[in-house]
Length: 286
Image (cartoon, rainbow, N blue to C red; front, side):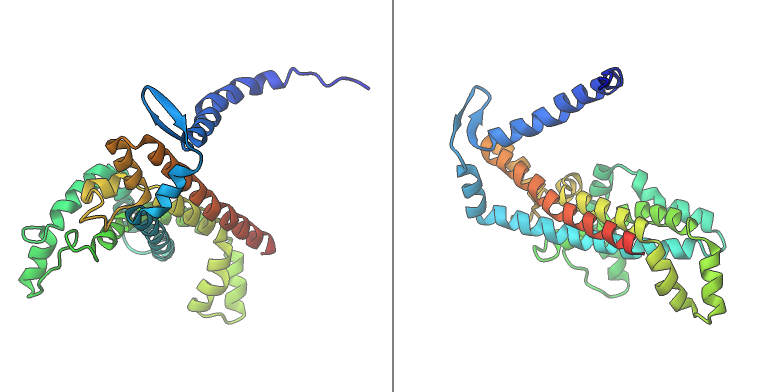
């Protein structure tokens, strides 16, 4: 039996080394340090104590709950709005090229810049939004100072910032649908609404998979926008897992914050892996 030449593996070796050094080793180190009480000078193995502490602290549970609410809310809104905007902006509307640029523009702006801008616009007394509402006789709420509204106000900003990318992905998905599907459905007497539900929505499923998964991952690990707008406040009302982890690092609880990173990693994997499998199975059924 002829031995297989190792020659092709030499081309893979540099990428494998880089992947191991930059991704596998840090990931394994994170799992190890999440089981320790460590600082810059040493560490002590404490088993699962960091994870027990994490799930016994109410504000950490609050951050975990907010993370899931934020990710589901923003991902759902971006998916629905992105599809509707893509359909509108591929319908031959006058000036649709300019409108596409306007919808996509927020994606190009710095997230920190967006956060600082909207924090000023949502100020309860001199913010532009409440001032504008005041002109029409509406007393605007404390968008970022009301604990019940703060997380949802940030979610609105994140949806505005991210819907352009979802729209762009859907436009590419719509362009891949052949006109023969629509022509066949029209011959059978399908209305415009039926064309949307029976042709567009099923055939744009690959784009939907991409939008949902990217939006969920982005929502689950979002930090910069929340930190720029509220720093997790007021109190812990808009804290998410990433901001809680950062605060723990600032306070010197390195082991606890590393355990938070492991929990965030597990949360993303547990949500995304079965969801991707489900979407891929649905694509095969088409």
